[in-house]
Length: 328
Length: 289
Image (cartoon, rainbow over all chains, first blue to last red; front, side, top):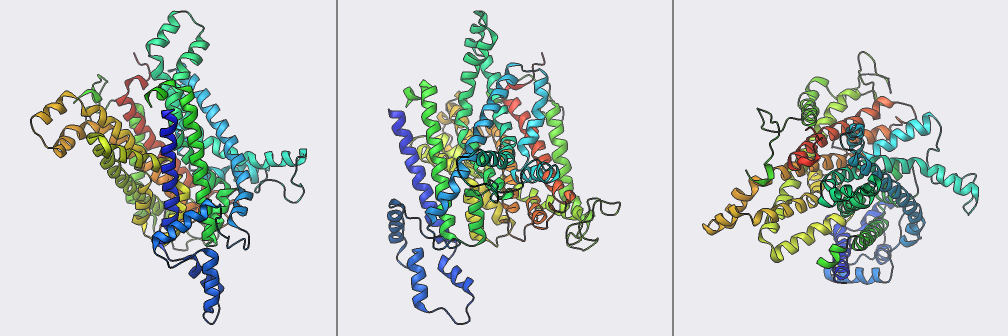
């Protein structure tokens, strides 16, 4: 239980930090969104003060002291109000995010499962057979890990999409011919459109897991309990999976937070290249059209999602490694 | 030296590092790019000059063809190499200094200082960085390369700081540190002269990772069009290539080289890092015996 409470406390602090950063960045670096929107209207005469006032109320800009604004901001968040989007006016930011979120969640979770599963599996075998031809693959994975997501997405789009015509070039499904719904056509279209973005994420992400797992396998295999298991005459497969791999995977799980950070970054680049209608694409569009309420709402949602995923992994870690529960 | 480096590996006579193919390959690749960054722009000429027709494929005069406005891709690539490496190294240095301060001070003093610093770096690790950088980069719009290096380094110190901290904690209780403490050396002296020299492999490895991370992050930001127009980098080239319809016109010579350079330099730096890791953990070495 102590473990659970400590983790809860930590994520509460992290969440508070994310909220506060989100509050401070726009206020510290630049003026307010109302000025930016007014400058976009390009009117000859200065806008009437009532208009300005109305905009300020809408975007929650106030001239109160910072701490008053801060509490007002927290109170707004507590009621789930993220403000109004400028680009999709008068849609609330929450609605815009709600439409983008399912695409991103689907893409990230599937790509992440494939990456982790494949990376850990291959890394286990590569570590088990250290010194075999599999080690020759390691320089290749190093190269894959160093490829920027954005460029890999461009290459896949150019060669597999445009060049060979195997995959569609953009979007999440065939908007013109398929209706959204639980039909075979729709699901097929979604899978077809998601294949290249997912492939981008998997190729870039897999090397880290593979290498981390391989190195931990090599270290674990020298442990006494593995030697003991072998001496007992257990089948090699059982020694590899139940004795070596089970322990070797633990440090990789703790590295999950960092991996997830890279993954989310890659997700943004990938969505932009493939015009995939997810959160990252929306974020860049919001930046492009100076839609500050939407930008902040998106950053907040992404942060909360990442924190929640990390919290879940920490809980899982407590389950698979009894030592951390005791130490807590 | 102490337990950190106590291996009887075959050593290079000049650098004193263990001889390994990885290290040599890594150094050669990184050296090649360093040379390009220094000499390339001088040899390649003006990247803005209009020297050819629109989107011409590679030829004897223009080795890497031309952009949509008829500028030389090769000349742009040379300048971008300099820009990217400069930002990478600057951000790497800043990030490493940050991680050293946080890691060494927290690990050495322990107690609430350590608790606070650990909390800070753990929070920095779980907050998604690229969306944060997009937000910040959009707000600072017209900063120079140094501003971007500074922003990038703000998020790159946390990971290495954790590694350094745990290493310091294991060094802190060694006999020679106790001896120095008993003989009355002040805390800063123990940190700088007793502990720091034994952190060199960890710091070196953190520094190399920080450079890779910074170059990748910068290229990601610039490729999304958030690098500020004034900054020339590999990512910036990718952005202009995508917006200059290099993809739909099939002008692969424009967008393939910058990405290939990023990946190649990243590979070189990773190879150097793997040899540092192997130096610290002999089990990782190929079973040579």
